[in-house]
Length: 357
Length: 249
Image 1 (cartoon, rainbow over the protein chains, first blue to last red):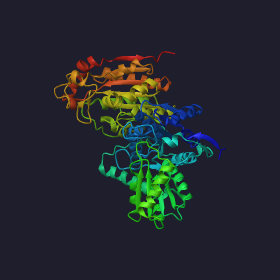
Image 2 (image 1 turned 180 degrees about the vertical axis):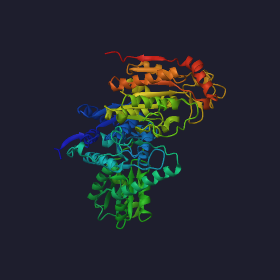
Image 3 (image 1 turned 90 degrees about the vertical axis):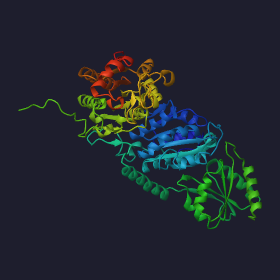
Image 4 (image 1 turned 90 degrees about the horizontal axis):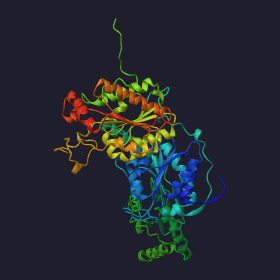
């Protein structure tokens, strides 16, 4: 670990990506993630083997990342909601061609152009694939400066290990906060596992093809089942969540990212008044940490899902719990950021209205 | 004893082209393969075919190849080349790919002066999807989506992407050729060699636009299709060196 430094969320992702061996970044300006693009411009300029390209569009940027991934380089692009929509074609192609890449979505209010305030309206888009076709992405939901650093490292490792795009689903709040962070030691690029599928010119070996056009439906079906097997492995191996004050809780809030930070503040206030409320915070959003939520439901019978959306992760909670517990919902879409005080009131109301004691 | 004086390039796999009789892609594939072989760059060349008739190019070229989404070949090639600057990277794209859905990618890749080579096969129609109007369809030319002929007032005039690219400072070499006669085929091969050599010398972006007959969608015999390229298409898209600053220091 390096010494503790104070940095903004977008810069943390940038630095963590460089330490993770990212040597290719392509992006396009959009608020509230510009500081990441700008950080990468400086960082890559300082590296002999680094490439930064300000692309002419989000579409071009993700396709440049595809090219870099094809050539075996750890590569990243970032954007905010409307720009991520434009990248969906490329993310579908990354999945089909089994290419690793890291995509950062600094979510903002939507739909449409929306606004530049923090939001969580892109959960469905990220966790359900987002582009066309039958695929999923690994999706990580950081909730602090430190976690932005830690999950960025993991994102590159997961992408290479599973040969799949990984989405870091943060938001305008996470991108703009300044928090102390300790970075992990830089990886040694030359010690990363080889990529025997990459294209670098067929020297001393048969030529290779990387493609996604599979005209024979049986062959396309085979690829889809191959991806499903990989997703099953991911679902088994990558389910992470944090629990906070859940042991004696009559009500557990389920929230991720910025919403979880707000919920924690509300829980602390409620606890001061003796209200037994806790937090379940998914860190991996896909795969959703179903196992630990189901385990928790053996002792907790009331869950309150809080999202900065009209209710998207809510469906994963419902699908996980399958009626085992009661599920309440509170959401503020469109870029409205609740305060811990607001959510504390939601908690006390929930206790009162439902007789939770 | 007979002497073997012509054979398939070793860069081409022993596979039967899926292209229609009289299609220019077969000739252009052979030329690209011969150029890669003659320049001795097989083991360091990476090709990026498009979406379109030539999407299956990787079934024929015995080199590393990566398929791009429709119109995105120049961006994918940019990513590959920036990571592997000592490899030779080319795209092989049709008119719809380069000059409609991929206009932004092509223009900006050229404007950045990326050290790649674009092989732009212009046959004036969307071939694979059955002959719809392309950006390069001539005014008055019938297609399945312009059954009465392309109307400039309604559909716009044919787009000359090579000339558009030449306006920007980035590209080093842009030439338009055709493959309608032995002479034109030889000129095309020469242009391809020059384009690859410019890349090998790290001089920057090169593009060869090749007017290519599509007898099937033009509903012509192969001979008539070649004649139409020579007499009609070449009037709108003249065969010439459009830009060449490869000699500049």
